[in-house]
Length: 73
Image 1 (cartoon, rainbow, N blue to C red):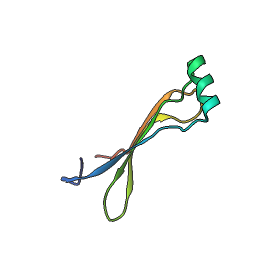
Image 2: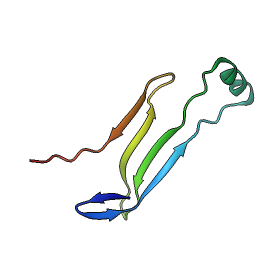
Image 3: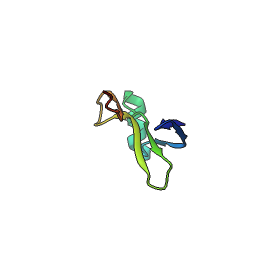
Image 4: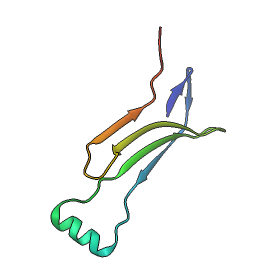
């Protein structure tokens, strides 16, 4: 649940797990280079909207957290 303009809204949490071939997965586990899962939150409304992302943006990259920001005055 997120709050938008004072009202609670439902979001969908999607987990994207990379699917590797058998050999690639074997060597990735052997070398400790399994790619981490990526998490995405999408607003479940009549018009879907991006809410948040957590995960690497490229192979062997750091984990990024991207969220929407609301300007306040």
